[in-house]
Length: 96
Image (tube, rainbow, N blue to C red; front, side, top):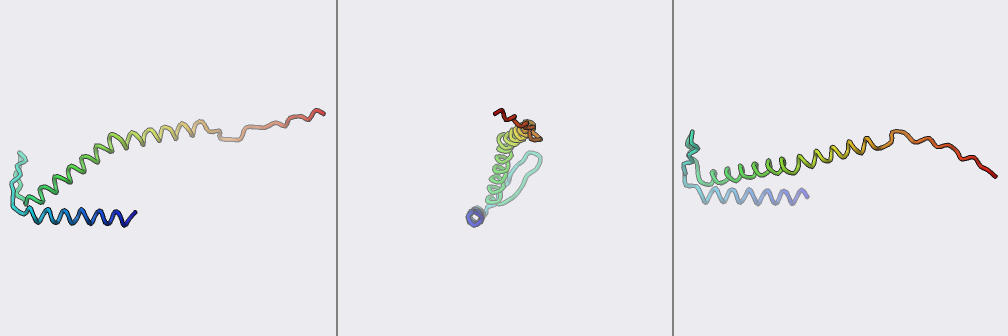
């Protein structure tokens, strides 16, 4: 699985380099309190990165954390229902 991840990372890195090279013209980003002068490629890549991070955070908050809570709750419930010792077994008298 590791080589597949490496190939995918290399593809994204190459795409980022090409995107940055093709969009080298400077742009001004007005953030209200401040203005940033940066190449368009960098602005696009930063916007994509912020979007990926926001999506990952939303996914974690809406799916991953509830699943972890549910799993932890089920593990606690299962642990409380398992017997801690073997039940005592009394021999049945043989009546012949």
